Length: 232
Image (tube, rainbow, N blue to C red; front, side):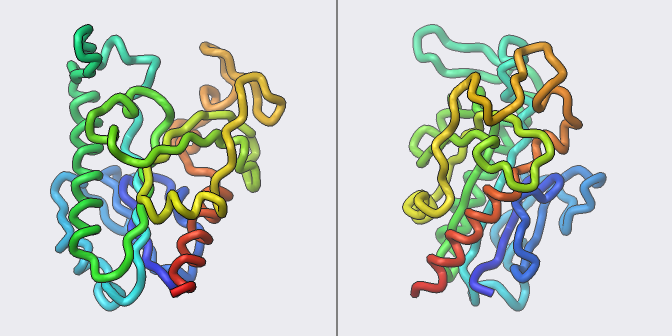
């Protein structure tokens, strides 16, 4: 084992790939049967230290996070957000948007806390469909890469484009040659066409399944972390 894996807002555990890695998933929805069913806003670095008892500090740490996208979707932007015409800043106006922003801010806060306190090297990635989350002030200074899921087809029954933002640590960004593939363009034959209002692509899938990370992308990122950890 070269790293341990903390998965925040883990859902169907799409980021989990290697069974040999000590993995802990955290989600507030009991239907996902995560290792920890708790509200992320209640947790801190000390909690995770106890969660990984016996492994903490002995290996590098990979943090993956998929904060709920419901409050950030483009389809509900007018309902969920007010945009200041002078500054362009979006302000939440529904409970859904406020919760989404709080969970995003807590995710970044926990990552920063763990980067400071963890004895080993910390790698991290935050994922969300390309929408309003990218406009939030808290992500403006973070490394960002856009991927399309159809470029990671292995193991997926339906090839969907789904442009997705990845915000990531500098050390993981520096390993992009291992895991990053340039996003495709709209209309390319590598994915199912899904015009707005249709039932193809992610619009016709179960919401939890549609949100699940492509296993090939997750595996490649784990491979990058593994290589980096074993070079030292």
